[in-house]
Length: 149
Length: 323
Ligand code: FES
Image: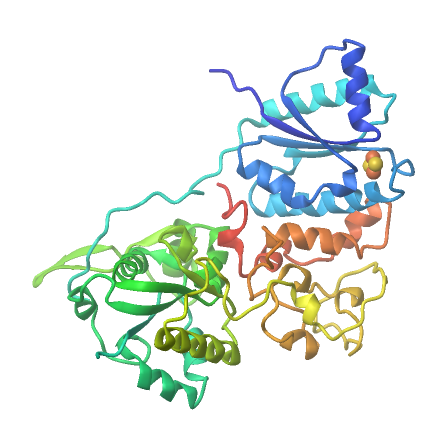
């Protein structure tokens, strides 16, 4: 079967979610691979959400917020801007391609930009292939009894 | 009436947890008085066969330290689980993988290859590796089989309580053991399963005596790179301190002495991944809104994964390095 990327999209309420909405109302076509979750601000995105999503089966995570200077909470997006590169370092340390995580600024009026970002990122993840976590879970093993001990 | 039985076991561990138990000083006498010791490889000569011969649920309390990294650790964990009424993960390694869990940044093959072939002090032209089973004239002998991934105890068996720390502080151990003796002798109810004992819910920062400002930094540094101010938050002085992502209970010993928290007391109740929490905490002290400058500043953090998950890698969301 062909690989269809599963992407988690974390969109800030004030700009990017509205931008995505605009792409929808304008009937723009873009890949259906991004599962969006609305957050109040990109500064609300705990890096744990990103790692947890990858653990739970996301092949990529897209975080979108207001352009720098435009955050509804003044500097939430700067927080995000500082967290994402460090989160990418963690991913690298875990042997996961950091390109599976992307931060983009999308304003409420940029429906077209949202479409572009989603299309491009979906292709990126498609090219990287599925994210498989090797030897992550524990499989019950037969009990081996070492009598001499 | 026979005394209740106590077992202390070490799996993949350094022995520090056993020493910490002995460190409770004269209170160890109360323990010896109250309990009948039935297994403690570090301190007494009991055999696995003795434990196997016991009835199920005949050990009242097992303190299990060490991570699960080979078939023997796993075998004894299962054995003790069956024989014990109450089994507690004791120390960081059992709780969350601990230092041995860092081996998950590589794998079994790479580790064996380094130890038996590549390390500078090794001469092994025939490439002889330890084999789990081996035939000798006297018969077949075996050693435990090493696993590719190190696991926390609760990932392989059911665990009743958690006593974190590397090692758990002796005053905390004494308090926990005292409470256990009290519960057993008065018939009081046990705390709910899954309770973290000998620590609090909050983070190390809540116990830390240092002052927090809103100071930001332009470079991270390591403890040996110059002295620190004794009164100000270490993170605001550019040190990678795991305080915000670590449970309190140790009495803030390291940070009080000027060493950044290494993160041994496991995760606070509201944190699910130590590294993720550290990313948030460190991002908030980085003084820049410019992507290039941000990259430069975070590049001064040596080994983020190994540092943020020093004790909790095996228990993190991603658990191990992906091939
Ligand atoms: S509200 Fe949009 S990024 Fe903060």
